[in-house]
Length: 574
Image 1 (cartoon, rainbow, N blue to C red):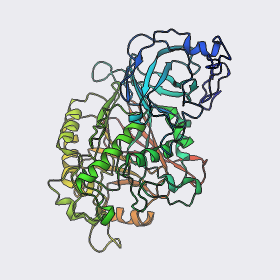
Image 2 (image 1 turned 90 degrees about the vertical axis):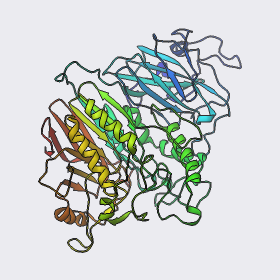
Image 3 (image 1 turned 180 degrees about the horizontal axis):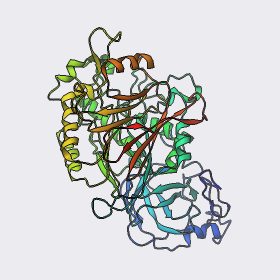
């Protein structure tokens, strides 16, 4: 049995060469039962040769070509594992990247490589329902995105790839439920994990082991999948790859970003969490550069670190392409372009709609252009023309909420939406805030929350990350009027590994008592994730923490649990 419980075919270990295939030297002349598993289904496989998106595996179940050795493809080619994402009722994206040397360019020959794929209803692949061949192209770092269709709604599937005669690990995925009829048709449940901020250099990722053990229906990642900083870690095996231009604390070239993603995705805990279920991802800032906004690079950068918009556009184009190449995302890449639309909407039966936002690509610069991003709260209040999402995406969100008929309406976005004001020391001095968060765009936030209120969307819940600490917040259109109704609840997950940076827990709690009465819960000293279970009657959130990120393996426990009841805005302790 493999780690995730899948059986290997007739003794073939994952990642190993299928020795039963015909040898180019003529050593074995006939197929044995291992090669028959792949080649004996039929010879009429549909070739999926779209650039980096393998296209649709749509029609009836297809067979595969016989296993054939490919020059340059050997054991270790699936060193970055497998992943799935963006589930629909009838389909899902399957992802892998061929990269035996993931931190030094990938190590693949500079030519197209055919990659076979299979989807089955069982982990042993005795019941294969879809199969085909995609093309891994050098232009997309030999990544593969297969948009498999024709699956049944609301059920588990298992998938794997083969390059030449090398078999990938097995992943589990799950399709979304099909919508029911009528406003009271919501049924079933949706279990998912909310994660963000996994600074490789700051520690290990036992939270991902815990998520893999949970086997959720979905993992929602709200950003900072990689960090761009130069090598600097107290853990010798966690030092970042060296970029082409060290000393800037930035990645700039496509090779820089590809090598960094290769380093992160080679982590076994992250791979296990990807194999456990489908992911829905969006980015925040560190996938490009800290605190960037649109085509404006990090505030406070000077000298060689500073880039004008044209130069930054080239960096963003490299970052966005590398992001696409390494994520199981349904998107259309445009090589060389600094643009990639990733905001999108997924529906899970009549139970839940997930609105996935992008609040980096279209945002206006933060007011004040302050290097630390900490500045007077008044600057955010006066930012009348600012937007974190852009006018088009704001309308898209509003229209989607207004049209929604699901029981729960989830909004995944990057930075904390609730107001977070502070004074240093607490109780005196100027009121300060983090202007890189929604607090720097207060009129924008008021528009979004007024739109949530006016849309009539049932049970809105905001899912956030970025701050490296856990929060449960009541959301109001005007936070300075605590007597006004709660329009939504926000859950902010703590980080997977990134360091807490808000002075201390006591400092934050003191300021919350004085200035932020809408905060229901806060904790910053532990890393972890938030685990959700959504049913027709409630949304339950378990705030999960790990004991020690200085160890690869460390137990995870539930620190606190909160529940939102259907039709009753606001969360309460479970």
